[in-house]
Length: 371
Image (cartoon, rainbow, N blue to C red; front, side, top):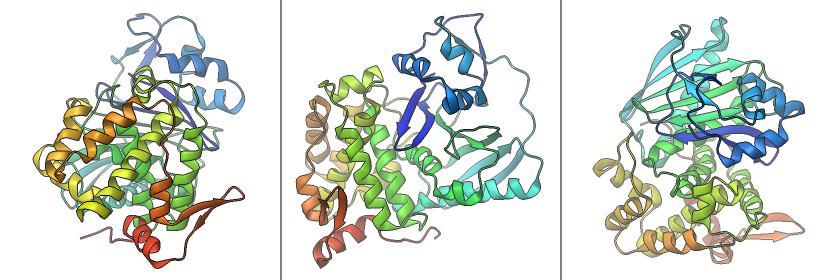
């Protein structure tokens, strides 16, 4: 199971996307060290203190990650407690949504409402859910973490599932303002791409966590552009000089992996709109119909080649090759000029000129969340 400790802006949380990860979340055992902690965990060990340590303790991971020995997954636990399980029908599919950790009917209703809003935000891509079936599991836990959703994971074993841990005192408004649920659901637009394609998959989820929320009205469109720009700024500060593909495979340089990946999809989206009269969601919609499977692994080169077959040309593959070998954050001057974005005194400025405004609206503008 792959664990990544992320610091995104002021947020501190765990996120993972691994097809082998079982749900429900298994207990952790030190008795059978069959799996070593990835390099990212070394950073976690050095930072387990204060609020972060309490957040890890919430997940039952602090002791295991702090220990030098390897730890292993033990999925022989007793059956999980029964939760509040409901079916959510959306165009294109159905979701089984389970809420655990509360006996308050109103709280369960609020968490189901939050999950439904996040799921419906995905409909602003191409009008239907990308998979016919998936699960969302929401588990409440005591935590002093700043984030209302300290941990999220997408699992692709025995079906597709999204697991979200939420603070038990997080308000519905705080949950609505958080990006984690939409980020995890955005992973369902692509197949599992392995470690080599981590920058591609996390990049799409990071791009769409802003785009889909803005389109669904969960986020102001200007705020969405500022959040995207802030993410790019964090990505630029990663200066290891290593190729993006190497950072991706070794689970290092998280900020550049996520936000250079987001830059890839922004550039591809703009190129499709300006040069092909198409859109990223139009291409992903066709990929969904012909090729998307919830489980299994697809090589990233195969994925982008299929997108190029759909779009025509080599728009995706040529950018993939360039980005994968890049040792610095990609330049975005051309994209920013087209969008009418600039920086003044450290603040993002949005041009009032109609051409750039129209392009920004085409990407982030409000769209219906139901059909």
